[in-house]
Length: 485
Image (cartoon, rainbow, N blue to C red):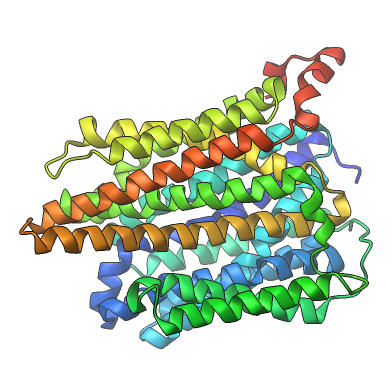
């Protein structure tokens, strides 16, 4: 792919803008849920489906989206995904009934899965040199890691200033812009792939397994984790997953070549991604609930409370993170970033009922921003460093699936633990605020353990890869790491 440096960076900005739409939508609805409930008459139980419908289809279609991109062209699938997501966003924003909103959210998830799976693949084919790819991943990593907390900020501002409809309608002009810029700036050239046939049986079984697993996970709090329904759905999902693995070991052109998981960095980075996503979702959702339900913040105030963490995350992701990877390789920034994120969650685990933002919240936000901004780039680089360009879409689909599954599972488990602790404290005579705070403390503490475990596993098991030597390569070329980043 022969492109000027300027053209590649412009194409990257288009990819980041498209991916930002998708990442934002995971969390942007959080602070708007009370307004949506009042307007459309959702019950407490059915309200969760505004989030769950998106998570289920997003998680279920990531692998399929990545392989379709490998087979039919990454730019083509990126455009189709953005178009579908934009149309579904319009339907969400114009929805006047519960059924329409939930169905449109599910459709958003399908479009979002396709975009997320192929955007990273397009970036990996645009930037092939280790040092330049590290810089590009810094930008892309900021979008992926910062988008969740930016969504909380934007959701609060739009809900307070306009209405909840605009958290979806804002995607429409952005989506149209991304389609136009993609046609102009992203090359249509395709990377040849070894597989020329779609593994239909594998696609059906793994998509069904993932959707059933997420469905069981996100509803575990409501129906109970040890009920026949939850355990039965998880058992069926497990059976479908075993069937998928058998199929993949036998077909000529598998959807997910099992040999990928013999590559240490892919296997380890996916485990790290699952654990870290659970911790990050705890930050986005549960700290927003603490601010809103315990400290009494408005939606806009909740959004603004995340601003410091967003700014720190952005500065580090785009600047310092790439320099650290180029100079030290993947492991030191990863371990340091995840360790700082764990410390930030531990500080939140002691935030009191009458907490002060400056004393009890801001230090945690800054630590989590520093941690996320430092660690996300090396996590993605580790996962993608061992694969050939022909399987970039598949690898990115696996990475994204791990993050989404880890986020859904981690959030469901931590929310369940928080709810159980809150119920216990209420039964013992604590006030509502004290009981909620006690529940959040448990969730933040376990989230800190997730982040610490991810740091330990990544530090012990990841290989440094090509990026460890990128700094010396730059010096041989007459450039410094600072110039590279």
